[in-house]
Image (cartoon, rainbow, N blue to C red; front, side, top):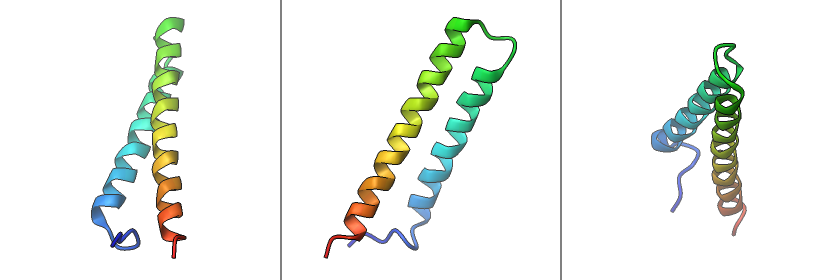
Length: 66
């Protein structure tokens, strides 16, 4: 039912999440932001990373279910 090996949609979702995580990290590392904004950007990056890891975990769980 789930076609993770050949799914352009799945690949696009993961790529967009990766790009968003990198953008949040780059913004957090910018020298022009205040500590409050930096903290906020780090929280956003962590939330996106957690979401991506959850999706990958659920995919692995589905793939390993007989």
